[in-house]
Image 1: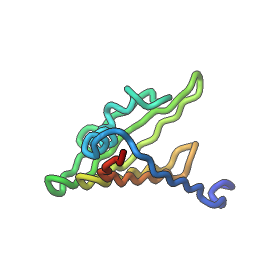
Image 2: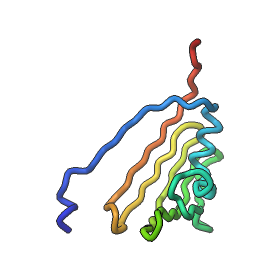
Image 3: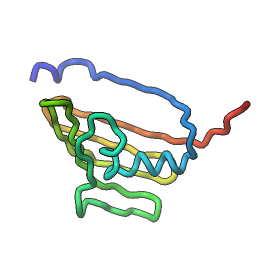
Image 4: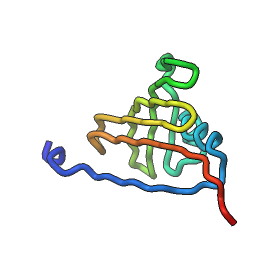
Length: 114
C-alpha cells in the first residue's frame, strides 16, 4: 500500500485533569462505557472471553470500537494491556483508516498548588 511508506504520525500530550489518578485510570480502562462520553464513539465493548489476568493488578483484554459521524463509520479491535495503578496500552491494527494505532496512558497523581 502506498501510504504505509509514509513516516508515522506521532502525537504526545500531557494534561492535568481534576480527578484522582485512580478514577481517571478506571475510566480509561472501562472500554464498555466509552460510547457514553467519547465524541463520535457509536459502539464500545470488551470482547467477551478475551480477558487474561496475569496478577491481581495486571492483565489484558480485547476491545471493539466503532467511530462514526453521519454516514461515515469504521470499526477496529484493540488489544488493551493494563498494569494497575497507572499504565494502559492499547494497540490497534489493520483497518482501512490506519495501519496501526498505539496509545499509551501513563497516569500519575498530582497535587495542585494554589
